[in-house]
Amino acid sequence: INITQSALKVLPSTVVFSSLVSSVNLVITTTGSWTAVKSGDWFTINKTSGSGNDTIIVTKTLAYISDGSITITNGSVTKVITVTYLTK
Image (cartoon, rainbow, N blue to C red; front, top):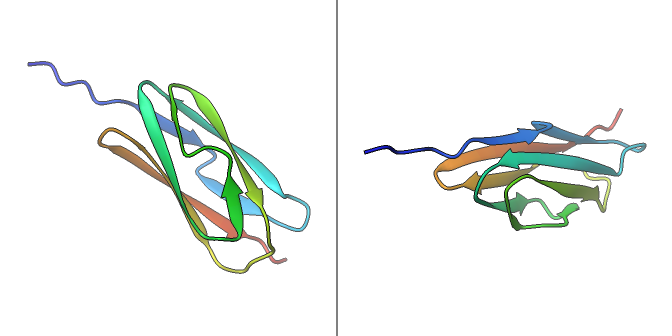
């Protein structure tokens, strides 16, 4: 029996917003379907699912001093991207 695990690569591994940075592209490299779930209400993502290689645009909606995250899953492979706001 051959079991092939889907490879999932997401760059950057951390999203850092500041007063000068209001949106960041997350580049997803994978095969098959994926889902994205965000935790934090001070930023948005433009996609919550897709298939194959794609880009998610993460946009800051408020200057907030709390970390958030985006969890991207492809089958049994999960990547958690930290979303933070740089105050200095």
